[in-house]
Image (cartoon, rainbow over all chains, first blue to last red; front, side):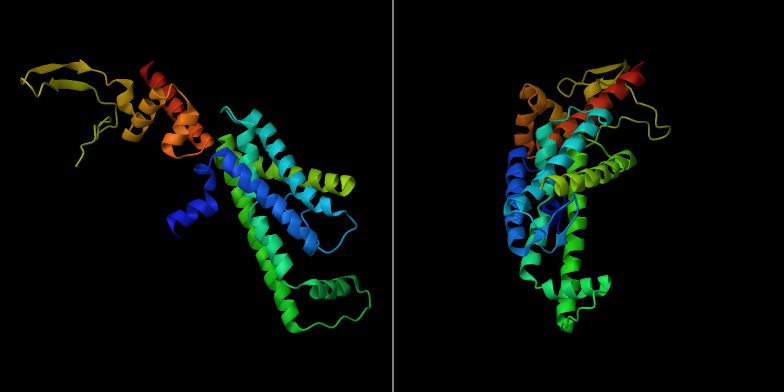
Length: 200
Length: 93
């Protein structure tokens, strides 16, 4: 891959100032929240993406992304106070983690553009064995498959960015860093799920 | 081609010392055993970083601007150099 592309897609945190990263990150979180209102997509967990309506207000779609970002940043910052020997700044953790979430903007766009509701309902009726007959075309299932691929790819990309953001902002590398990151991610996933389902 | 100052013995990897100094102006030669100054242990990039760091009064923000890098990546680089200095001090003892 081109070095410049690699730099901007996978290692942007080495060059961007904290304010630029924060601006890009918050814009992406707010914009994807706005798109999620239209497509009824939920980011109801640090790395969760679900489609389908749930009885929540429009502002909650935006709040989901903000809770995910702030909670994970706070937990990473707290853990780095114990494990990193560098002088860590909260602004670096928050700004790089915000920017690491920008691939979700692609997810939001994809769920809005690619029609998937009929195929969702069809699969749901099969799983739940509800007995309701839903007829769909093959291309609708293909589109759902394409959307799933995009969601998985952007989620993996986001996790890679989140790890690199954490590694640079907290100055932790190697197996120790990976272990702390995974434990913090799992912990944050559980807490965010609880918070989003109880607060929003 | 720029010559690189060798710091380690190519045969046994031990740290080299300075044995001879030469004045290119008058040809005087000084013979003796001298230690390398600590700064010589760093590569060119690291030496340049240290010089800029002193010139900016130790401002990592200024350094980030000069190097076109983010603040945390400059701080991490400084931490690497600090680690190297500590290792050198240990070796000296």
